[in-house]
Image (cartoon, rainbow, N blue to C red; front, side, top):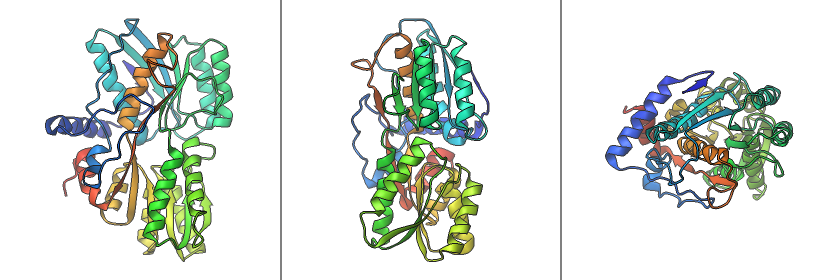
Length: 362
């Protein structure tokens, strides 16, 4: 039904398990199809509300019996394995209605905007109903999406990074508030540190809108407080190994660093490993649901994590792609940007999140 360049079946099995757990317990409610934010969960249910796994197709009736899509994302990584689980669930629900949805879901092993541009141009020649991109670098990829649109392709963006403001892509499904996520995580860090201290920022990939936006949110938040100072900004290329090396370098050059802001899913793991080995007291805040990061959160090495609802991103991406393929434009049928949630979780939430997502009960 679909092709992938890499499959992480462990993540698939674990998240399918949590679907079963949530359906048995009644946990999680489907996010309304709106560009408006959903209510922020209270502290007692942050973990159980972070990911919504009981999604169902809306009332839209597709015009065709078969669709074929192309999706390319930044890099092979567990974060996108979670996104495809939502796509596959939407695919299964369409099939139950007699509608066959096939799609290619491909990415390079390391982030490359040039590679993504090449993939998109190749996809344009193959007659897909919709072509979707998780934008690797908006300055490089946005013109390519415009080029495809001018050639008649229906183009959308999805996942974590939208294209530039005036891009001709039809719609975006994903995180619309990366700047705010970076600001919220940093605000939590500042409060923890009593609004005093030196901090470092691990960004991720150069030019990746989601990483850069979170870093901007972090920098602007730090700039509000006279007692706070950013002493290092490094790009770890979404690699936990490079994040580990960079954190060790930062702490060697600035042993009085009291906080580290991590802007993607990989760098909290590398930063936490370095902080642990060096016995640093630096407080770490970061993004998403990496299993090792959740264990560091449980152990108190990481202070908080912003968990995105990857499953809903995938589910909604496939629904919107069907509507775009039918010739619909943003309006009553779907918004131009579909809001997806991020939930900040803390140490008290880590055990439940590990149990739900990975079956860890120790």
